[in-house]
Length: 424
Image (cartoon, rainbow, N blue to C red; front, side):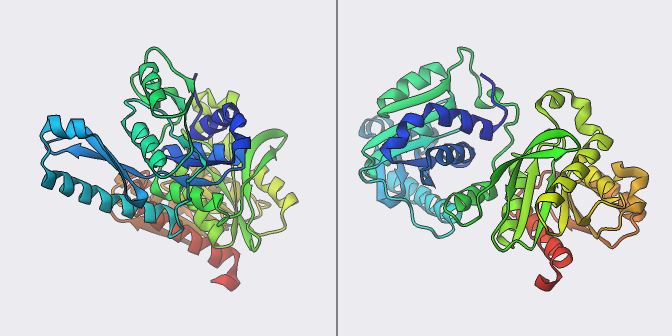
């Protein structure tokens, strides 16, 4: 069984967990990759979502060998047998536990943004990850939620090694796994898109699930007669809306675009993330580099949005999506009031750059030297208000700590100042 991405995996997993709805469950995602899967499960079961933050305690000088695990609330699960056989001294045990506890608390605070941990006492806890290879973290998570008072523990994953899935049945009351392929080497090989989940995405999904951000509405975008799936978020105080054009190799589920969208939502900006290509079209790699096709789809989606929402519209493009956003904005009737490019290839918009009238912000990573040059080339062709921002130390995907936060802040400020002048 092959999954498109973690969102697809979560939706499929949710179908297999429908029987738990009557048990009033709490869904717990293992950060980071398990949280996007858990979010879809929680939405389908109408259940609260939280993270289950655990830290494995590794034997000194043999950290791959775990002698226990710790969780929030002072929970510690220790294997006395491993401690004894490995000769772990008490002072070493304390030192390892102290270091891991500090990291556990840091991560928990960062993910929840100050919200309290959901109580599990007497509840059904559904522990969700994006897949299981060795099972060490999943086993620790099941033990920790049991120690935190969960009455019934379910371990739910889209894919796992068959022997590991069998062993884990001793750690949970129920194990739900959609696929246990006989030939299994890594979780990522069972996903078309297994891009890294960022801390920002974990934070945004938890905030959305707890009502801190307006829920996404699944919509069918009519892009000039082509139906495309999309996620529309409109905060109650929305003063404008931004349409996202993802780059090659990603979809509306792009974790980086979703993280940026969450920052925009908090600033009162609506967002529309949609798939520029149909599932059948995505199979052909050349389509993701067909700027004319992508720009036409984006223009159609923007016009569709204008018929449904009476708000100023901006465009956010990543990679090849940036070229599509600029080419679409070059049309006289585009209706686009501002454009932001993240790690984009605006140069691929070619001669259309000179016709763009919407204020344009180009954001590039400081270590993405080739793309910096291409953005400078595109900037020279623009005749509208524009700015090039270089994020120091960032590479093409802005995966470095704080890099994507900087992109999101720049995009938020650009859109609010140009689409909602009174907020600037």
